[in-house]
Image 1 (cartoon, rainbow, N blue to C red):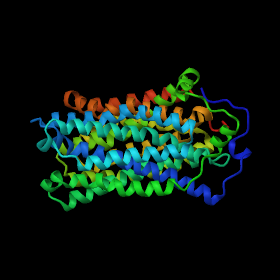
Image 2: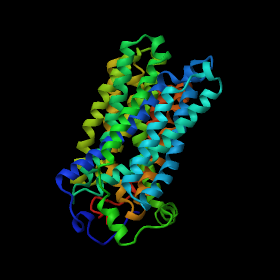
Image 3: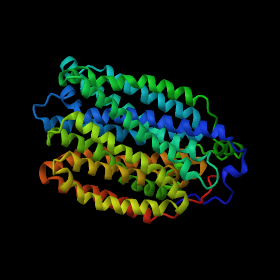
Image 4: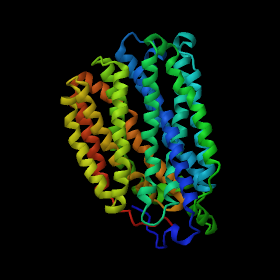
Length: 438
């Protein structure tokens, strides 16, 4: 399932990066994912709060929410396509230039959403353009994560790939915190009418500034040692995607199913529970956003802890423990969220996002370790983003329907089932901690 090279790791056969250059590379992998996930989460939060009324003229609030969640899911369909496209060029021409291109695609799509008029101005053209731009977001993010993970892990010293691979995994926590923090500030400072009229656009427009920062950082880094070595040994393949499915299909499927729990835990908390709390439990928007900002701090805390543990004990033991806990957490959803108590709901959000950090952190090293250099960008990106289709694209939509028909107990069962699927995938894997990336 994993690559089984016999040569020593890249860090032992190529010129080692200095600590300064490694720090720059780690920061570049972190800042890119932070910005790209900021862009992605801006839409997720807007979908839960305002996209439905602005772009879909349904009379029913539930119908508006379902329509908004459909556009939310479109990006997850686009993400594997982005990983195909950017993975091809990342494995053919290099990690650095491909990461710059993915950041540009994401930033342009997000900024244009901020300028897009609503249904009242453009009619049916408004949701069509929204879907196109959301698709663009998915394409950009599809090419981002795999390259950022490779940028970190292919430069990591021996025995520290889990720790280095943690930095791109921190990006989502920071991106989410900045995104929700900005929405929280707007909710506190604007009236509901102002927020729906123009305030929700501010986080989208702010993306342009963040993307400029990310581009500045990424243009100053060098290509990874593993890719340079692959060029020297003429190991590149003509069509990485074909080679991936022909020779590494099992590893791709295992990586994809392993990712399902991460996506489900996060988007059930950040999208469905936010929408449910505001629309059904009638918790004030700014209150719930503040609760999420608090909970995501525990996701950020769990990420380095799990990364360190994955280097110390292995990827599988950390993931198995996290997934077993995630299965159990599904049973807590109905009593905690259904209580309507902000304190108990915050406890549930904290639990879910902490477990998301535990299961997500080792993936920064695990997925690259499943594939050889020639298809590593494509393989890691495809696995990561296929997991998004399975675990997140329709998860808020399904959760909304389950809540309407069977209540939160059914939604919690959905979380437990997703975690069980990932657990089976990880149990079927071999340990990859000591697999060299050369």
